[in-house]
Length: 396
Image (cartoon, rainbow, N blue to C red; front, side, top):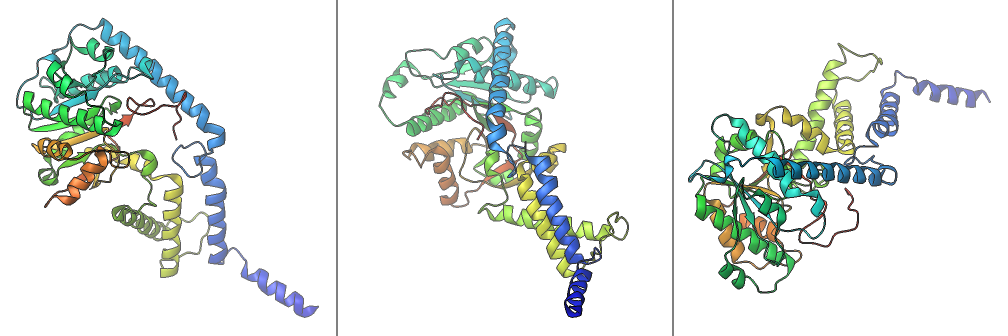
């Protein structure tokens, strides 16, 4: 009996708070089983998000907000006197082309009107000279008009296919090929009309953020922009996680863990309210590196990226991935090269225009493509203009 008492007393002695293994275990349990679940269970892009409790209500709230914003934009454009955006000057530093088509679903959300209202406000924020010229490219070929584009005609230059071009475009093709052809038409027509030094192409459900032009101007001032085919201004938030085959994200993730671990261990001699016994040793550095990496991934990289909005200089520029094309920046005359390459490709499911552009950047000698993070637009299009839609779309 005395031997068992000695054994347990020795074991319990090893489990004292001064033991760093006990401290590490307690910190891990408290962080990942209590603190993060409590703080993150409502964060849409966190691993701790409780879909069964919050997804439906959050999706409905976003739809309601977008509907109200769309109705407000409709009243705004109906009551507004014509703006000066209709007179588009040639050879501007930047042209924004908005590609739009009539939507059979979600028409009451007026995505195009929302985007153009935000765009006009942002473009007029640069002083006496506008931040950019703005063009609307209406690719609707059906018997029914795109009413939102018609409403904008007194305010913006709206371009469409001629009757002859519409007859040539009557060939029945799959949705992905049609979407690509419309995109190529807008790229070429915008360039032919304006010949801008740089071009941004937005889809009609890509709502620009307030700092949109500030960041775009900064991107164009950087040297890499002279050597890239395109810069993606949006990547789906659900695909922004660290756990990803992209090497730069893995390096960013590891760097975050090492920096966080080093900073914490260096601070313990000066601030240690919990009386931790950790030191700047290799073992403790590895533990806290993994600790910070796990916490960052479970919280959600999307939320950490939001801190970069403090300044245009903090936005990250990385190699582009395949998805997606709601907002694209084409420096110089690269829009013509992209249009030519797209025109030579046939798009199908699994090989849509975003995939073709990604393959182009990898195949051409010296071809490069980049993406910027965090996103410069919000993708508000719950209802697609080219794909089947559910009755009530969900955020995830």
